[in-house]
Length: 405
Image 1 (cartoon, rainbow, N blue to C red):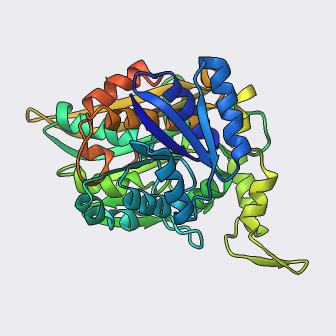
Image 2 (image 1 turned 180 degrees about the horizontal axis):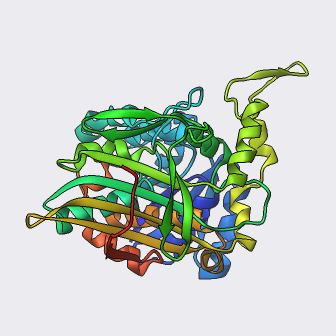
């Protein structure tokens, strides 16, 4: 049994803490900290009622390395699991280095003043973690995370050479709100309004953002969800996969968006509500997207009436024993079932469960190393087994569908 410190108390954290509590043989002591301690206390109270497991809570400002160091030194965890905001990845990594503790997160660092998504800032910590004999695992949610694991599994077991990967993310659920985001609104909107990139023939190719009339999209027939309009989008796991999947010639990421979502987001963008720079308002500086976040539903509260499925997977195109094959590895997750188990919607569930499994892999010594790792660099086999055991079962099928050229 090991001691874990979880930082962050949003919808994903709710799932992580409850799934950790389901495995006391691995997570002997659970500590939860956030800027707002009352959120930690609320999660801890639910865990106590559901599993008779005590979660200790604390207040910490994850932007402040000194506060983080003091907390880590007090708790003395074997691992820090970061489900705070992506802006805070580097401060938490700095604190882990100072305290000599391993690190895991679910999303790459991004600077607060610019919507820019890449791993370069965290990869720059490679030597620091190696020299300290510590391990940092990056992007262990679903996408990134499980999608990377699917790719590692396909490379290890299914293909001699993978030429193309298409990652397809569908949320076919209905939360009953006119407009809401399934995870932190600020992060979500920054992500989906950026210029799109995909990897092809050794370079990044740019295409218009999803709100542009010329955005690239097509209808894909998702298992159990049916045909859904799917838009080309940049997503961070592609950046590491092009380095670690050998022989890869092309990789794209697709995500479903309803016309209702796009219309609302376009209006918000047109009136300036998605801006990330500050504006003057009645003598004060405010950031429009932060104000918008305060107006939109908290993603952690969406689960109660959420219906429908989330379907996420990877289509592979490559060679097996000299023969050309296409395979599809995917998971189907039901929003209502997630709520019944851990009082969360499927988007939080599909991020939180893999984070718990990644922590389990590290604490059990199945994943070990010195330095900074993306999950596809680690052995996928036991992780894949745990997905089936822990609520995210996967399927592998031959793929006979159509994808855009």
